[in-house]
Length: 204
Image 1 (cartoon, rainbow, N blue to C red):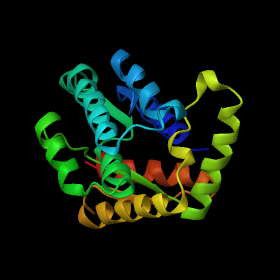
Image 2: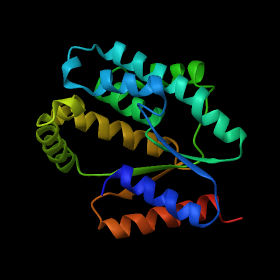
Image 3: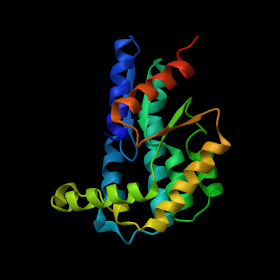
């Protein structure tokens, strides 16, 4: 059970409590975003430059915020988003070695400097993450119409940089980022996420 499933389980729990929740993802979340997702994740675009990759991700994010997230916030809804700017800081800033500064500057310019109230960071051992990525790579290669494995082809050094960037973000923003051990049993992870959300956002 990965982060996407955990997100949907959390949404179901919140809806049971009478909270209006929408779930979305990046890249994606809009008609334009889904087209950009295909470009960004397909192994057919393996030659995409790191700067072009980051520019497309922020184009996706800017559209996503203006079309989905801000209107939902104005309606008083909760938004659960599978990935946000932290992922760009980790993957493009860290993994692609573009640095955090340019990512944070683009976020401020293009995304209204919008910040999540809470970020759940599911932490996994790098070797385990690489092995899981390799399995997804093989599985998705069998169905090229649904190929989203460009990042899964990256090496361990890339994922080490991504992991280090995520840890730096968590250290910098402990008020917002809460780490959860993704290696724990699925039910335990789910209970911990629910408890964190209730303590942080529903305790009043």
